[in-house]
Length: 395
Ligand SMILES: *Cc1c(COP(=O)(O)O)cnc(C)c1O
Image (spheres, rainbow, N blue to C red):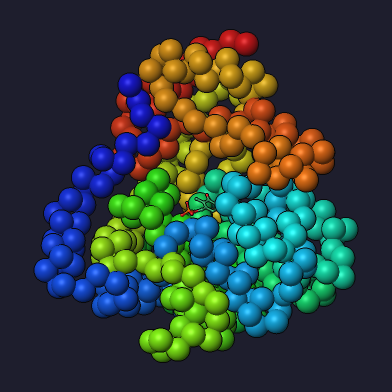
């Protein structure tokens, strides 16, 4: 059987380094808030091209803490609105409602599955305080138009970068800021063509290092990145009981910290991220060139200097009007696939007040999408097999 994602095989590539990193942590006798975290935060900040990276417990907390910090700063208040794509993973929306802010769902673009930026402005009200963009499936969601809208209405832009670590946005016209050079030690020669990495585009970004993400820990972990000194300081305090100084509590915080073990593991895996993302792009390109079935809609691929840089293909998502039948056909032939996601947030029991809203594009996406296997360790013969199966499939 071809697995959707073989985590054992992915991590086995780095077994020696991972084992020596975990042994170092065990032997150190220091398991939280130590040097491993400091080192990983420094490397992550350099990799993304931002001033601050703060390790937290998971991706949901990363987003929760950003919003909580903005509330502590007085930028947002209970009941304020946050614009968010209607087809995101539910965690994005939980982060908003958990802070007693109001998620304002906006339809995605059918070609990119990302927030339709042209629809944003008409959803802005006097209570709108932020746009929470999601780089869904690994594809960058950003444009100069988006920057312009945020500036005009004085909104924060927060990135949910759980699925797109390593992806780059290349502006059409040069941005005002300087392009921070990415660390030579970490950056492979393949990627890094002078774009700006997701996680450095907005005012703040949340990352997930859930094991199945492109940069996966061996457990839960997440991070916040930002260039805002005050926000960074407050997020750090909020994740540690609202305390900057032991036993002095300025805020009503959470306990949301990245432990030393995960930090040490992630610091090893970060070095291989660009190579793994490059493999994902090559697999995606192979699929797009070799799947030839008019019943299957492939993801849109765009190139910058002949490389795919705006997408790290966390998922390779196709669409088919008879999705469930196609999935069964692949399962019966030994190919494991998943659906991201089968039920949109506004149809979930957790959000009864949203159940009556109608988002036709979002609903169509949830009815038609199917994610093919795309782990960086896939073999050519597996890809050939999957493409052949898909080409032989008839509605
Ligand atoms: C995975 C994910 C999250 C949540 O991350 P966790 O580490 O699982 O809490 C948030 N948003 C998106 C888009 C995700 O894919």
